[in-house]
Amino acid sequence: MNVLCVAGARPNFVKIAPIVHALARREVTTTLVHTGQHYDQAMSQVFFDELGLRAPDHFLGAGSGTQAEQTSAVMTAFEAVVGEVEPDAVVVVGDVNSTVAAAMVAAKAGALVVHVEAGLRSRDWAMPEEINRVVTDRLSDLLLAPSADAVNNLAAEGYRTDQIHLVGNVMIDTLVANLESARSRRVASRLELADRYGVVTLHRPSNVDHPETLAGIVTALATISNDLPLVFPAHPRTVPLLDGLKEQCDPGQLRVIEPLGYLDFLGLVDGSTLVLTDSGGVQEETTVVGVPCLTLRESTERPITVTQGTNQVVGTDPEHIVEAATRALAIDHRPCQPDGWDGAAAARSVEVILAALSEPDRPRPTDLVPDFHATEDNRTSTPDLEADLHR
Ligand code: UDP
Image 1 (cartoon, protein in one colour):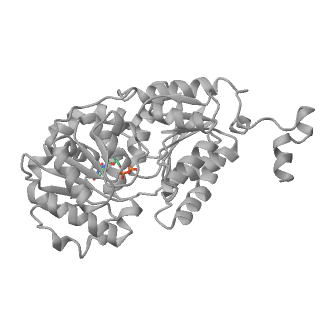
Image 2 (cartoon, helix red, strand yellow; image 1 turned 45 degrees about the vertical axis):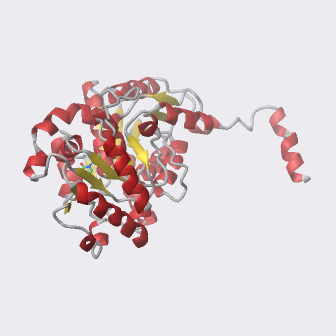
Image 3 (cartoon, protein in one colour; image 1 turned 90 degrees about the vertical axis):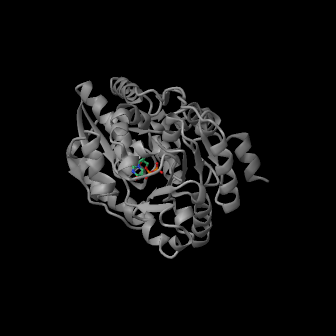
């Protein structure tokens, strides 16, 4: 049996690591494929080093590009690997272009397709990740959901109950395994930060690719930083877009730095007073460590971080952001642990995958819609269809 695991971008490495480790503990042969969507030291290699992830068996070198360029580059290169490896199952995680590209190739190759972090929905069709989530789920045999809201979304979309499994949050497995070591690195003192400080991350196209939106966010950050020094480990795609905006801010109060490795970033967030972000994963991590999080977007695909955790979706209007920051700083926040965010989600995921692989005749994703060729009834069109035709 061979289970092929795919990862391509920063958040993927954090999610695939516990799955690869859990498969190894069950002595399952794995093939690890790195698509190369993120490829440099700060966005890729540091995660392999810090999370004990072995070197990938295949590196696809997809690189950056437009949505279609990146997706198609992964598909072309991944098809050759799948042809060579002939995996029994392909595990994809999250919502990046590599996720949907690999799922498409794997489904057509006949492998059991497993989506880890299935069912999250922002309901914002302008978000490329939302399209990736919906399409990946439709291509997948197994939908491993991180939270009850994700299960409800999948059920509402008509997926079979035998496909949907509430396994919990694999990203939090990585957090639980690394929090002590992250704390011991004392990143805040290495960065010479005061006792109270805030952390910023921004990389969603809806924020950083719209100059007016980004300028408004920076105005809000400049105001907040008068009271609370902010540190901003900037995503490579965000750095050039900040040029010309940084003058509004006192550089001692809003510090833009290189992206951090996983352990330093987790330590930084854990010791912070407030986080302002448009990241998906960071909304979850702040909930677990009990730091207030302001999500600078109009929606979230992770509503449980709002209903149970420390997150508030505040949009991008500068006044709203500043008001929300003032309110959040006045409240005492506690760490929160939604169901299944307990460090054992990957182990549960692997049990579901192994059970499915031991059942060769299990239904496939195509069995989601009623069988249309077998029965006498299906040979006649349905009354509803006819009503539409004759309207
Ligand atoms: N992260 C990191 N260094 C940073 C910023 C983020 O290690 O400088 C980690 C963060 O802890 C989380 C993951 O990267 O585990 C989130 O990735 P990102 O925000 O790029 O993607 P998203 O979650 O929005 O898909």
